[in-house]
Structure formats: structure tokens, C-alpha cells
Image 1 (cartoon, rainbow, N blue to C red):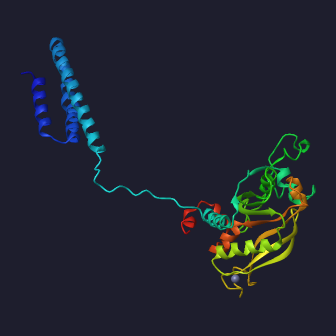
Image 2: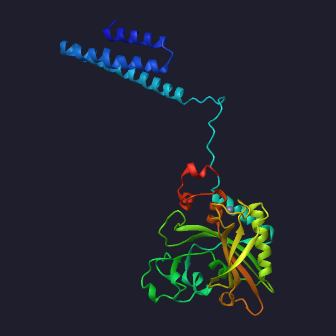
Length: 339
Ligand SMILES: [Zn+2]
């Protein structure tokens, strides 16, 4: 028996004793790195005839060990990947709705119960729908760069207002977009994101959420508006809140109002949330301006209606006593997981 044959015999005996593929792999490694390498080292002391003979046998054995090693390695891998299907699985972490999404859904639900339908419009708007059609004067200051985020366009000043693009500053353009394609009566709400060119602070963000409302038909009055909006706020705050209208100005409504809701947190007594006044400013509204109806191809002699815009962020801030509007957009889970 040659030395190599003895070595192989020893190797196979050792391998046979070991059940674990990982340990068998280690045995193979030991034979390659120690036993075989010393055989190869000793070749130089042999005669050239002997060297060729032993060298060939040693190479054959080396190949055999390598094969054993790779099959042990495969078995070890399989062993690692083996899955115990009887073990309980890892529970996936579930996300949840954003507080503003939750609020939007609650508002939507109340208006849908009153026969309103929810519609949407583009966030990238043109100047015609955002300003002109809503009766904004050509030189109205809101059209300035410091208030509105305009889109950079070549030869912009030469373009008609239908082609001048901007990020919508309110959800009101959807009023015109909706009305011009249909005939009254209408009862719609438009929830959506709007954009302003703001220096941000705890109460200002460059984007926020509005919920627009519009009801147009024959003989729609301020009394209808008060009824709809009172019902809405009582349902939303789950409390018997009062509302009051204060005269205001918006280009697209005449007359226009600011809508205040009695503070449900202190019951009109005055607290830090309502600034000791007992009232919360929550909405701008008014009767739709005849010029807006005309822009939307609705006959202002025959139809009229009301429109309102609610700031969803403002309501969420009041409800949850949030100190900074920017928290809603921070993506900070420590904040978002509280809702
Ligand atoms: Zn209060």
C-alpha cells in the first residue's frame, strides 16, 4: 500500500465517523491544507520517476477530497436553509393611516351622507382656473411670486393664462373644472393638497390640505349654507357646537364670510386653543360670485350657490393640540404613531 492509499484510507475513516456536514467540510480542509500539502512538499526529495508517480496519485486524491468538501458544503447550506414550519411566524409591522388622511375620510363621510359627492382635480394647475376663472383681478397680489409657486416656462409672459402653469394655491379651481362640464344642481366636495410659496414656521407650510365644498342650484341661500355647515361641524366634533359668520372678502364669493365654530374644548369659556376667545376660525366661505358661474358657463340669472374652503391641517391641529404644522409632513414615526 502506497503512502497516498494509506492517507486516503485514514481520510475515509475519519469522514465516516462524522455526521455533521460542517465538521466533514473541516476534515476535508485539514487534509488539503495539512496532509496533502506536506505530501506535495516532500515530492522534491524523490527521484523524477517516483515524483511523477506519487505526484499523479496525490493529485487524484486531492481532487477526491475537494469533491467531498464541496458536497459537505452543499449539505451544510441545505441544513442552514431548512425551515421549521411549525414555528410561529414573524409578525409583520403594519402601517396606519396618516392623521390628515383619517380626518379627510371623516369629513368626506359626513358630506356624503348629505348627498355631496367627492371629486378631485389636478395639483399642477394653470392660471386661468386658479385665478382668472375665480374672479381674481389681473393685478391681485396673490399672483405674485412670493405667494404662488409658478412653474418655469419659456416665454411665459407671452403665453395665454390657460397655458401658464402653477401649483394650485387652493382647491377652488376644481369648482370651475367641475361646473363647466355639467349642468346644475351640484353638490360636491373637493379634498386635496394645495401649495403656497411660504417661509415655513410652526403655523405655515409650503403645502397643506383643503376640503372645498360647492352647492349650486336654483334658490340656494345662506340659510342652506348655515344648515349644511352646522350639521357638518356638530358631526365632526361630536358636540353641539355653534357657528357664527363674520363678513370677509374673497374674489370668488359675494358676500363672503369667515366661519367660526364655538370652541368645544372649553365650551366658549376661553382656553389656550381658542386664544381665550371661545371661538375658532375654521373656514372661509360665501355665495358663489356670478362671474365665477359665468366662467363655468352656468347662468347666474337662474342659478346660485355657496362655496367654502376648510383647512384640514388647521382642524387637525385644533383637535389634537399639535404645536407645529410641519410635524404632519415630517415623516417622524414618533409623532405619527400617536394617532
Ligand atoms: Zn377654547
